[in-house]
Length: 243
Image (cartoon, rainbow, N blue to C red; front, side, top):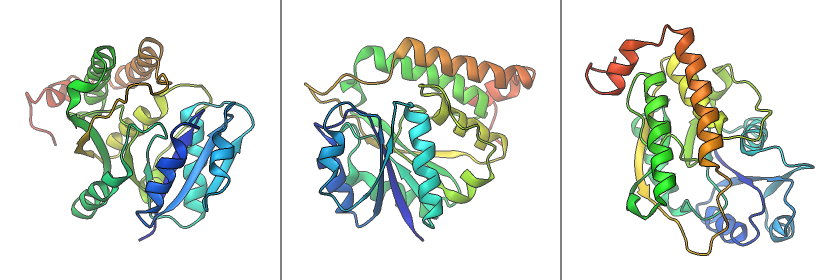
């Protein structure tokens, strides 16, 4: 089984080199997609033995992930692991996701930031809980930390899903993958990882109001097309057993 790590990077000069070196210590192939950075991100990546793709302009996280995923698939990957380049995710936790995938083959594995979750900013915690509610409803089962970008995807699942190529600078893409997978009968499994929010780190690219609004509208579209899926809601709330 070949695993390829994909990291979308936008103005990550302060952290990207350290993250990449730690991923390489896991003996995994790595693709970094520079999303039109205006800082020294590309310069930091130059001495490293990895594949670097460059977006000429800032396309957004979803588009960068999609491009990196397609490159990984073309390289023969069986599984793809995504993580952020700002230091929120520890490459040392990759074996946790790989172990979960061996135990639960075919599932999306989410690195859920549930350990020390109280260290996250309050606004971010509230936004994540709100998103978790809507996405759990659309999926028909409880989803922990639906906004975590630290994930493992089976390539067979990605190639089978009808995924729209993301064209907007938003965080909707990763949420839509979970819903589309659930529609086809594939669930995700959450694995607890530490919640890391470093003092002095760059501001998050996630915009709680705008991005959660976009996610909510996307979920509402899915729910309306299914008559609001009341049984899904009951399953998401653990009132009914999950199928």
